[in-house]
Length: 439
Image 1: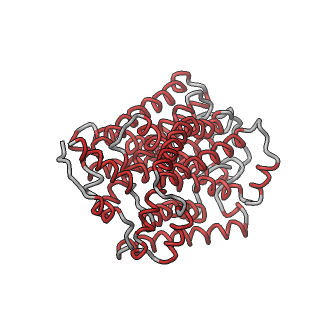
Image 2: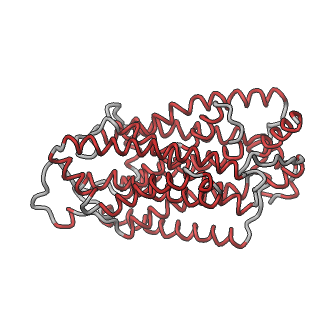
């Protein structure tokens, strides 16, 4: 057990108050902006010349964009895992992680929506989806559930932030002038009365209960976009649970990576402790084992049946063209993290950071494997088609846009930490007071 550290209200406020970027922060932000600008230029070329600049063709009509969409949707589910599930389970140790989880969730779902519009080729066509949408189409279900999840996630980020905005306004001299205007606009009505705290607590509990089924729906519906088509690799009743378990795993991995980075960058060792890493490590290894189970189920059943088209798909994954990335994804997203985190020494901050990175990288590769191999194994054989139609490898424009979207999500998280506390200040103070009373 780690020794309990007694912290004063003033010290907690000073430690958790947003800080200006140092040189490493400026370099990191500049790098992300540069990647975003390259991605924006590539998207301009795509708008000007059409989807012909991509490697998407008649067969591989879904590629790296849809893989990125599924990845963003997956990583966004961490908000419901940390904020809702642990909160409703009366788990108090997760308090320093809730805002990290929510900002990852919001940035992920925002760029999931953006990347879908990019994949459409014509952004004006998105309006047609809203005007001429059909309830028979899972795409409309996806639009509705993603929009709902974004609204709930924003509220779960905003409502617990209100007491901290009051603290920001009490220290105006530390803030840039335009930031004071932002704080005033967002939280000037918050006075910190008992009634406001009671109402906010009630609202947060309602949102926490609501977001869990919505979170399950968002990835179940996303899985139905694939599973409702009669294609090898997608024709599965396991896809909903398969997607949800993988989403919780990659979300937890992303939180672990963020925990380590913020702890190092802002010297938060007193707030994000080794015990937090130990407990998150247990959650990650549990989710990795669960996801491994669904992966075995996903491949074992069609392998047992040995239908012709499924055989071709599985051979392409296990020993064929996609074998390298397939086994890399399995090893990095599940096997290696399990081997690292099963042992207590592996649940220290640095090994946890490595395991979290492996999970995130492997998860992105796994989403690519869900989309692309199936597109290249249609039910009807490819005949009289150009050679380039039978393969898919993203062009530099696709790669630049994809990297730009990933950098954009990181940029949202980076700017958030610059202007708002990444760990809830008021909640941390309240928990410290409770601890002092108990002692």
